[in-house]
Image 1 (tube, rainbow, N blue to C red):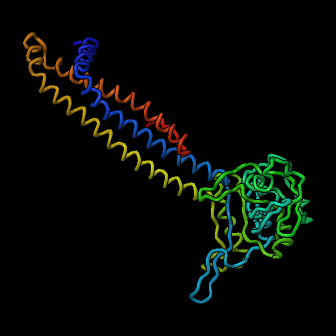
Image 2 (tube, one colour; image 1 turned 90 degrees about the vertical axis):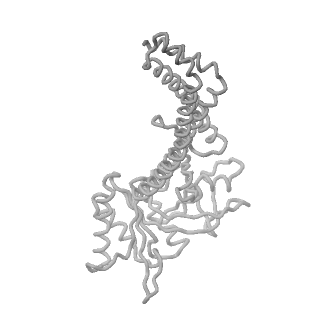
Image 3 (cartoon, rainbow, N blue to C red; image 1 turned 135 degrees about the vertical axis):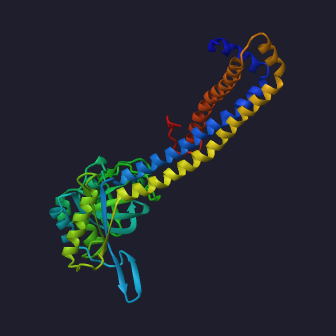
Length: 371
């Protein structure tokens, strides 16, 4: 039996019961739309996490002082001060897998411009910190190694700081702001970075030469942490091993003793975050797939009811010579038409739902061709 002959016959049979056919296809429509929308939400969350981690620098390595111990009492990470500028310079000079390395100190205080003030964090870093973070200057220029060597009172400010200290839209480059009681000359404005995966506003900060913050604002002689970048994302674990071996040697840590520092890298963070988002995406897709299965069972149920209703029609067809295979083909074609129509409408509805969610709820979505 020619399939092209069966299709019009099957279509006419479905149109005799328009409401029933529409309700039957509705199960598939809801199922397909749910799968596409849910997977789009999961994919969007994973893409957002990747973007946020990448904004931190995917090949970045962060080195923090370790924990202190006093008898049975143990302090947290960073409770001891074991790093010096010489450690950061040694890492940059003696670790082949390290491209850039900057010591880092952090000062929390108020920035003041005119009669406006804003609480923010001030990071004391080397000029190469911008390369480590893949961070550009959109307006003005960055400070230099010469500024670092002479502890110049210059700085770069983030977009959030600009919005709160210069709300009238004035150009902050060249302006003088006070950090605490110390005046700083604004050299430039940092490019927008957005939020970190843990919700911290990366644009709400000021960057200044390391020596300036260390000596003029904090009056300390140690380094609070060290940030480096590997020569590539693939070399990040080699770089981590080289840094570990060098710092253990410099800090004279005997074999078998635990490190007095902690090393973290963005690759591990990305893996952990991606694993969480993958689980969420699988969970959302599985829940949505249940409605798709229910829709398929609905079509099967209606087809069985249709066979029972149309025994008279089937008998007449067989009496005039129709074979069982031809009758079976007609019912299968009816089921396929319902599934295809429901699937097509469900695809458009799912894509539309994903876009509405992104537009109204501001939740990132990413349409998956595989879904």
